[in-house]
Image 1 (cartoon, rainbow over the protein chains, first blue to last red):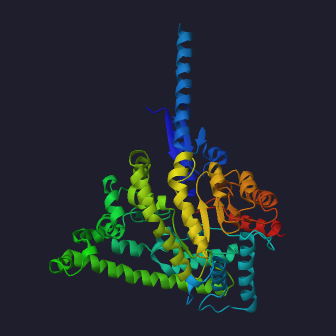
Image 2: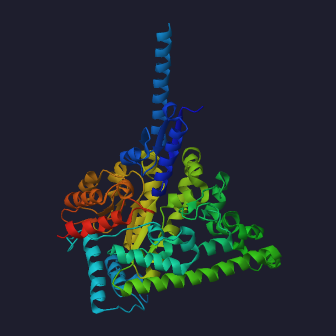
Image 3: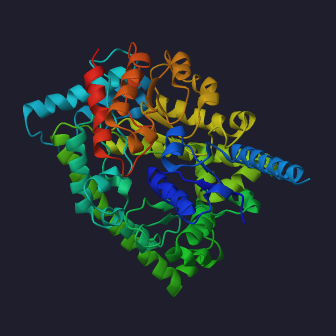
Length: 86
Length: 443
């Protein structure tokens, strides 16, 4: 099961398919367990909101940064969970 | 054009190009008003470009395949049917009422691609399932990393016997040809023997058929141009050329290939870039003079921030691009440098061009910083966000254009355009971009 999904789109034609993809994740009940990032030169916060993605970025380097950050958050959630069990 | 260019200074050459642009061949204006509007639009663009204050900010929307969507056609339709493209583009020009229009050539001819089996463009409705999609450019390593020497030694031979057979399926047999550079009184003219091969003959036949189709397509473009110009709209583009780095990166090595070459074989790449530069210059000058239009579009693909480091830009991308820009200016044509991606960190390089000779388009940039650094050097266009055009309201678009005019348009040096080519955006938002320019852009 992936933890992060990245969608890249260069043209204005990609905005709505990105939105539809994220809606499909919601319908499948997967949205809460998966982080979604979108990117390319045309993407800004307005398109992030339009699509419902968690984050946007302009290049691959920022995508790695997001993925690491989310992985860390997930890890600390796990640790927090274990602490409660203990 | 019957002009002895060699005898003229660069300013005189530019003057001749403007004269040619102002008097389009074979065009009959529909009315004296149309003729006057035609001249007024070119004068407006010229003033903004040369950093004088025009009567109003020019509106130059370089739309992508918006006209097809706007006319309710598929992209597949306009790529195959030149009449349909004509209708769609005409409808768009009349609705947007721009200062310069973009003609149907941006839709290409899918028929030509089919006749030679061009592999680098996927056509919607054919190789792409949805006929409404924009065509897609496919990169590959059509030149291998170990072939730089062969390319550098004889680029034309490389194109004929390596690139064409690999990039066009119908031209594959051309790989059987021998290098034509020694076709003199030697070896009993062995070089001509491969032309007797039936497969080679077939490849040459498909070249002829593609050439015939191209002639039809050029006629369709000419017909469209004559009609639009007759209505008073000047054509935006004389032709396109590319940064030498992109010529090699897009068509020969691919992004992955050329990015690795910067690290692994930098000297070979630099040598190939130098070899390519005169060709990039030649494409621009020849095209502009043939079209009697000084505007030469240079879309920049791989030099954006995030694609390469500042040092790589300084070493591999900018020197030959600058050489191209200076050579075009020297020839009396206008480099319309169309940056794609983030160019804020590149602004310090872009300032290094002759004053009032270049048009810089921006997609993503700190537009205030761009005005601050480039304001005295070059006219600026673009930057109206596609996100607003696609998902925002008409008012949001108008507000953005107003701010652009207030800040960047101060004292001239601005033309209004979207950040990049656009496709299925709501027409009312595109209209808002033009309306705002005409409402707020009067000096």
